[in-house]
Figure 1 (cartoon, rainbow, N blue to C red):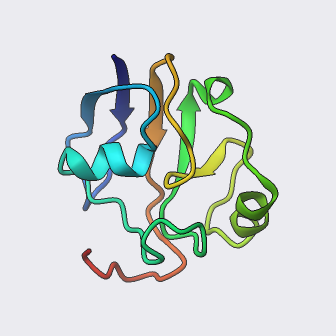
Figure 2: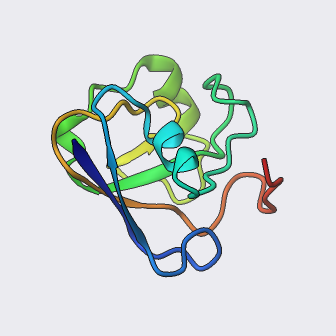
Length: 112
């Protein structure tokens, strides 16, 4: 099992969260299954940036982003070198510390 450690986010998980997941699952799927409602306006089809997260620790354990994800990330609010789309980032065998940015490109969550 791999741990995903979510840093506190004012609205989504004010206290932060730690969840155990099996490698091979995306960050977005794992979070949503565990009550951490990461927005995913495109229904996880890699067509928007609403599921943007920043990997504060463990970034190198993720597979490389493909060209489509990289192009979309250029449009994400608060882009950092360790940014990923959580619908595309597949969990490996190393624990991750994850920050959910305060804003998305939508600015207002659509509560999926």
